[in-house]
Amino acid sequence: MYPGNPDVPDDVFADVHRQVADFVRTRVVPREVEIMRSDAIPDDLRAQIADMGLFGYAIPQEWGGLGLDLVQDVELAMELGYTSLAVRSMLGTNNGIAGQVLVGFGTREQQARWLPRIASGEILASFALTEPGAGSNPAGLRTSATPDGDGWVLDGTKQFITNAPQAGLFVVFAKLQPAPESGNGIAVFLVPANTAGLSVGAKDAKMGQDGSSTADVVLRGVRVGPEALVGGSAEVGYRAAMTSLARGRVHIAALAVGCAQRALDESVAYAAAATQGGTPIGDFQLVQAMLADQRVGLDAGRALVRDAARKYVSGADRRVAPSVAKLFCTEMAGRAADLAVQVHGGAGYMRDVPVERLYRDVRLLRLYEGTSEIQRLIIGGALVRDAKAAQ
Figure (cartoon, rainbow, N blue to C red):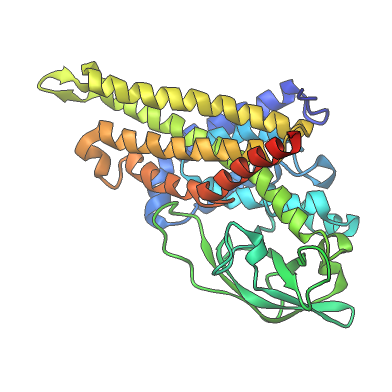
């Protein structure tokens, strides 16, 4: 059972949710083309996001955030998924995979130093895990962490790191050298962007999500002190990565539901207004079938996301349910976006039409926080292990 969030009661959250939904539809949706063409989030929108506390909506109130739990998080994510995903990307790492490493595993000193500035949006935090040759599986990391006095020296290259060009803090995962006799040998470090030896590459040119920034992050002889080691222990890295990714998978699934809702809304509006031979195309049964398929997937995905979030918060399932939700919802959103373009016909292929942008944006959802293939391995492996254990 979902225990409820004592820090943010239902009536308080309802007001937050209402404000976010209004902001998305009245402030962001009208500027989607501007965001796409400029490949940037306008400064005034970022300021409004900060004023609303959205850079820290999932950060505990103790550190200046709103203190929403994952059940509430997914409701906001479904709203944020309704518009340009670059907006969610800008604030997502602070609330999600980067910020949650500090929330769940940081020392009190680390939390006090970084979380208030993360929650306010003063600092953007980046989750530096992915590398060439090591994406969905952290066990393949090559970035090294070598002891040096009471600190560490980091060397390696990270790839596709969200918000890297604007980040003030990098949450860096590295393999311990020499490797320990037991454990995964993965540690996680807090590395300020201005640390000597850390450099950020050119902004990546991507298929979609215009306005969001990703880039390589290169660490060459980056020396950090003992205060940089998350949790004060070299043994928490792998657990921090897996925990943050699992939580993030539920969030991404909710984001996909928001995208699917937008795809359906745009499809229905177009089908009701556009005509073929004087007849609204929505009167054609094959078009109605496409709309029906979108609606069925959307409703199933929304229910699955809410169920996975409740299981995560209650502790009933923090491994398989997130993977189930992410796999289904991101694949579903991809189909919904494809059907939306099909309903629009040639108009759906035009650059400034919302469903064209949506079609490109949602493709990434099946890749980050673990690809669809990784989710299938997690789900299938768990089923087999449970069956063996029951024998």
